[in-house]
Length: 388
Picture 1 (cartoon, rainbow, N blue to C red):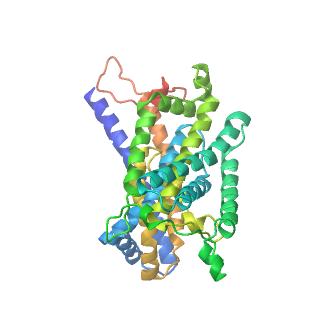
Picture 2: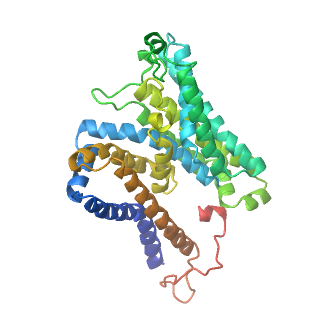
Picture 3: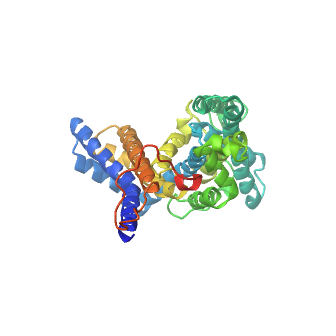
């Protein structure tokens, strides 16, 4: 019995370390790419680490960059646990930012204690609507959510472009005839509290709090259990009396709500206005896509996404220092992120096989100290909770 417990513990520990092994493998491949570019990998990675974690300001910038990734990543966890794939974080981010900005601009002289929470609530609702539409299409018409969420990204981007060069353009830009596509600045009183003299703001703490709350939702409530059950086996869930369509739509709506909150926090904590370069990336910094990477690295667990978002925030912040140090394109970091995704997804398949093997482990009656040899192909988890 003791050896079996030790085997299970060591197996679970290895599974927990797999994302780190995947990152190291990606860095090794990245080192060869740097050599091909004529750069010294040691100098490049040292500059990256120094730029991300080498000083108080660098660390604060990393946390600021990680904040929207954490919001979006935690939302991605909800969607994936509900059995749907949310690629619409960019559009939901923009929708939430627009709604939050509208509240801030509509009441410039209102009390911050009321206006800021209202703006965040508006961001949550905007993102939830933008995520809920593909959710409803998936639940009731079986429309592929990958395609619908990607298309919603484009609709949100073009809607933002229209509003920022038209109805919501900064009046100062009209007076100067410069017509830079941006909104007016929100009132300084609405800015989130900061850790002076850094750029670190209260939104980072809110993001961590939301990750904890989502963990409680998914693993400590009936609603969360139903969402995970639908994600694991919709047919069995339907047979058990769970409204599958409702929980699929709800998963995407909740996922979008967190991405929308990320947009509102970005406005009130970092940018203090909305602006566009014609694409969503100019405002979001690709947080909607990087958040997916953070969620995968965190093994689609809200608490695991916290350090994952911090890591990828550091990679994005350190890219600029690395570019200056070894003269490689800053886009190299995007390639490095892609490598991490490939390796993490590959190790995830291995982790699932190991999890199935542990679930099927039995102790032979004649030898309590024996370890399971292998999981039979036909063996399946005995219930939904075991598979989780």
